[in-house]
Length: 324
Image 1 (cartoon, rainbow, N blue to C red):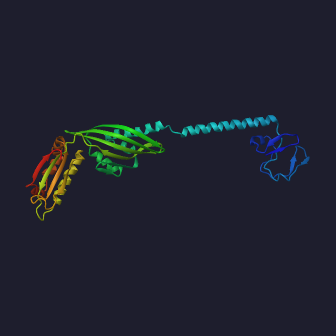
Image 2 (cartoon, rainbow, N blue to C red; image 1 turned 30 degrees about the horizontal axis):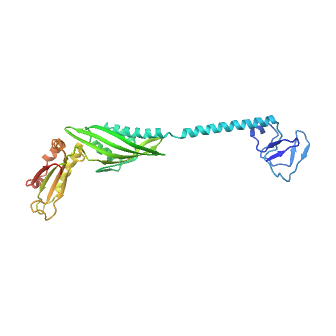
């Protein structure tokens, strides 16, 4: 798309605006009149059959001006290209840095847990955080924190071994081998688990979104259990005994022994004429058993045991066994 002038040179129609501004008579966005105007009053007719309209009446420019125009355009293009490369570099994240940021969030989460810093725990999690671990399903942060509060006063030694971390966009996934030694008064327990974590990047910060924890067998668990064989008389109610066991279990959980509890079960009807129910207490080991039964909370419930329930327990058979 070039137009030849009488002096034999070509100039492009697409002329940079700064060149046009050098010529006061250049008229932009005006219909082509079919005439080429010189600085004087003479008019030179041109062929209007091929060119119907034009945006500008062009004037011939010198070779020097054309070279200056091309040089300026090239400089502008190089500058634009450089800015584009810089912008892309700023927006591209380093995978190793993202991975490190995710794992920092996980480590900070457990540090806050050990310190019972609940505001710190919340700040490291999404608002829709949830957690599932063996025996527990916490649908929100409030429920999770309430369970952690039951462990206040215990001494923790937590070791997390991050096996892998994968980052994809604004989501990340980590697999962890979790180990914790917990001591409360004279009782001790250990937790080993395989855990998986899902993270979300919110406002350029990695937050914990979901955790799944599968507990492995406790090495200190000797499967110590207590058994109470009882007889509920005909026409009697087992509810009073169930209510009493629920109070014991709540007190045990508040001590921090969330995996120890009483379970009330019915003997298979017709299999025994003397006893129709039994209560199983799970204590893991002798140290835990002693810690629970010496706790003031447990003693208070025992001392205020309902009379109807006490009468049922009078003719019980009591056993304490290991490896049950």
